[in-house]
Amino acid sequence: MRLLISLASVLLMSACTTSVTQAPVSQPLSLSERPREGMVVTANPHATQAGADVLNAGGSAVDAAIAIQAVLSLVEPQSSGLGGGGFMVYYDAKSKQLTVYDGRETAPAGAIDTQFLTESGESIGFLNAKHSGLSTGVPGMVSLLTLAHADHGVLPWGSQFNNAIALAENGFAISPRLHSLIERFGKYLPKQASEGPTDAYHYFYDKNGQPRVVGSILLNPDYAQTLRRLAQDPADFYRGEIAQQIVAQTSMSPRAGSLSMTDMAAYKAVKRDVVCAGYRGYKLCGPPPASSWLAVGMIAGILESGPAFRPGGPESAVNWQLFADAQRLAYADRDQYVADTEYVSVPVLGMLDSDYLASRAAQLKAGKGLPVVEPGDPWVYESRAASYYGKDATEDMAGTTHFVVVDGDGNVVSMTASVESIFGSARMAGGMFLNNQLTDFSFQPRDEQGQPIANRVQPGKRPRSSMSPTIVLNQADEFVMATGSPGGNSIIAYTAKTLVGVLGWGLTPQQAVDLPNMVARGNKVRIERERASAELVDGLRAMGLTVAESEGENSGLSVVLKDQNGALHGGVDPRREGVIERVVFDQ
Image (cartoon, rainbow, N blue to C red; front, side):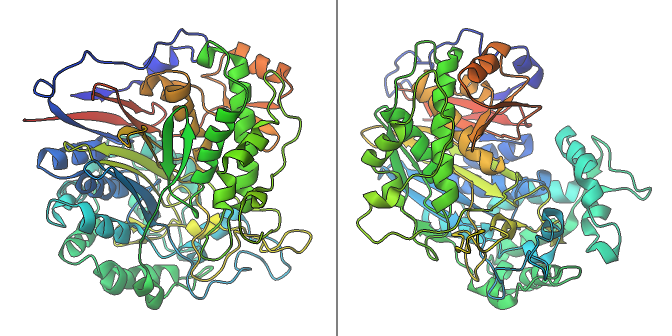
């Protein structure tokens, strides 16, 4: 059964004044009565269908994830793709174990910490950096998918690409969202060789120089050919003709990068242990740095130790104020400390230490917003020498996707993938958009006091990421919930909102997704104008918070909740084109 969530119907709801119900609990069924079911939630109907088709064909959650990402690379190229990277959190139902697959891009060996600066030390500007070969790191997505498939794939490698190949060769209709992004951001695509490679412009614009209209059919035979090569040998991406195309594109003027075939061949995705935080009796888990999931865990831990929520859940402005200040404290620490742990020391244990979180939570006052927020000192709670760095100067933009898959055996994938900003670097190779992930580094290597910044550019380093795919377990290590979102540095806030909404306020996944997005970072609280009631906004301001009402938020939340009787419930973000597919299997 496919559930299409209508944006119009959601906008008729008042997110903060309408009564809410508790998360659904289905009537108990015996094991013999309950059908085996899976679920796929993505931000695009084609991708959801591809994942469901793979599950129906007997594939695992990882098989479905491969199919989904291959399709998203084609139909949602503004957000993610095989030319980018990501993080997968995988839950194995049999062993009850969680694994992180880290496919974050790496900087080339020739990268230097001043590569985004002029000779006088000024920034070359975000758009100049983005639309360049300087911005592309070694793509990690294909390595991530092959590594996960080797561990948990069921279907033969390559069969997962069938949906994407058919769409690339036969064409797919340009969706309203893709069209709107072409209209808004197409002016930045190079239109002549002096501005850079023009492949993206000719892909999206007709011979009259007009963006292709909604519903027009877009073909991408180059991408179909790339997928066929990968189906035969995924190593071609890093050592063969595909790698050569990627290197050639990044080497073109203006602002050519240093990415080499040696960099490509050296790349390997990495399996890592999850990091976890407790919240209301549950275990929340996500990737370690260079992911920023630590901030999601900190928000939960601060709320756990701080003043209790008032009755009413999302209808209480005080509850939103506490949530906002917990975000501000967590963001302050994340911005200061999180970077690639292979290059800098990050106080991971200290940031999630219960005593440290209690000390941060002690600053919270119900009904009174914090006037100023500064980073804490989690190093005090570590058993090793402290490492301090300069004040961060990183700008990370939104251009990402998130999806969740639960297969018939109860295995789960929560995965966030990205090309960084809209259409990545705007350079294409093999029908794919190449990432601009290196702009996730701090453009300035040192702060005004001359102290090195933790997230500065260094050869081989993974830039800090806001991607925070999350899986929640109960005390028996059984799957409860998976969530995550795109949205640049706002990912942390968006993801935390669903965790608080479902686990803290008793909402359904869809109700939690539909709540107004609120991002509280630094001394400003940003909240969605269309979804937040005037009473909520006024209430937050009356509590001393500086509130900015935004016209919209770029979230794309995908959520699955498993209730206490084993039934699955999905939530999909109406701010994008998401679709939920429930897959019921024969016993």
